[in-house]
Image 1 (tube, rainbow, N blue to C red):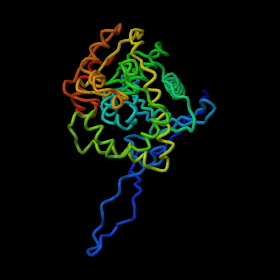
Image 2 (spheres, one colour):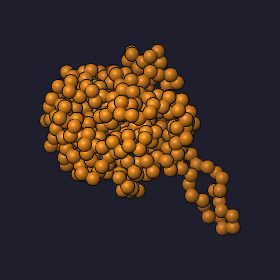
Image 3 (cartoon, helix red, strand yellow):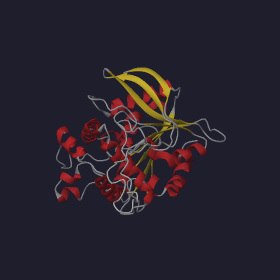
Image 4 (cartoon, rainbow, N blue to C red):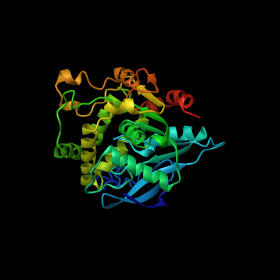
Length: 347
């Protein structure tokens, strides 16, 4: 992997929405029809990020890539610390917006990358995805922007990336924070059937806003749906429905294969730095559980149990539980989440 430089990017601004022209006027009274769902470019062009996007250009696996990121300075007195926020599989750097505001306001420099294959970053036609590769890409970005030691906080799949980053670069990680990370159990070993990449691809090609909304309502928010969550549905569905449809789905399929085949649970005892685990206990996320037999599915994704089991395996672990919350407590109840998070961060 060879770094090639950092450049400024488009600022967050009004979303560019591509609308269908059919039905623009209703027959008879000329009333305007409802706007079509938003559609975004293959690097999420048109979706408004909360802070200006920059781009880190580098070469990896023989391919020129761009890694989008936000680099937000501390507001008020800076505490000299940098925190890196790693997004999940169905999330982007933008979904950290509430946490960015709180952390910057508390004096942290906040760096928020979109990993390769996700969101506003390159979707390569061919890429060997591994958590080691994503961690190495992130390290190259931090080197390029002059960041040394960090607190690294990862949510969902980002928790797996953050754990791998901490295992590979322990001298750079002052504290590891994981928010409802996946990979805390080995789904394959527990009886979940494997999907081929082609099968994952077919599944991703069929993704719709309705399917995303229903899944997130059930798993992320435990049946508690609010209008503010719709933006994140539009983000994911609009990216998939856009001109990069097939490339977006293909990268998503490769990433799902990575997630399923590379659990981090076995290496948790090797983490030497302080580890903070924040868990919404009502979460039931388990990759591939829809293929498993009912008795297997019933044993998977039990975060109220997993959190306690994992923290017991850590050398320096601390668990904070959010009773009744789902997979994304930082979005579902941000004030409650940040009230617990800030005092638990190293200063």
